[in-house]
Length: 199
Image 1 (tube, rainbow, N blue to C red):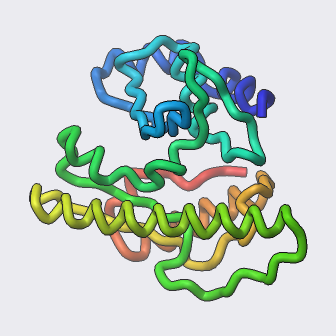
Image 2: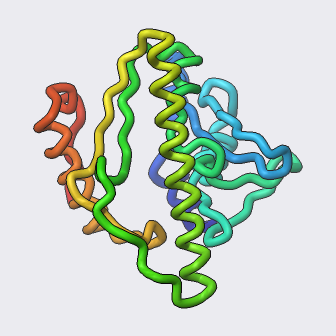
């Protein structure tokens, strides 16, 4: 996924990085340290531009289908393997209101297709594990929020987006965003602060 790393640098410039850093707000990336068996959170306030771009890239690497990255003498991968929805971490860092965007419908409307080969079995297994991690994170987040008087806002998709998260299609993904935006806007007024994506 080295092309993704190049794209991140192209889209997220060093000027934007410095502008964000100057606000003193925390922009945090979640990564999984497979060497230490830990989930790590990398804040924009604590790293350089190149390192932050690395962490963004690493947080997207859905192994074994994408690159395993060795950084700081450790092997890293997508942060979702350790924390898919890090509500607890956000609250512990001082968040009093958390907006959670869940990229699936609130209720499950489909069953996984039978595995026909090792690859499809592996993708099904990964999907199952990530789904379990997500639900566990949400449960822990709700528990933590109740003990800290934190407001949680959940936004789900109106329809099933895809059954294969390894397919990337700009047109479809833009339509997904706009559909999700309109759906969220129909349930809350807060989404007026967010703009729909353009083609």
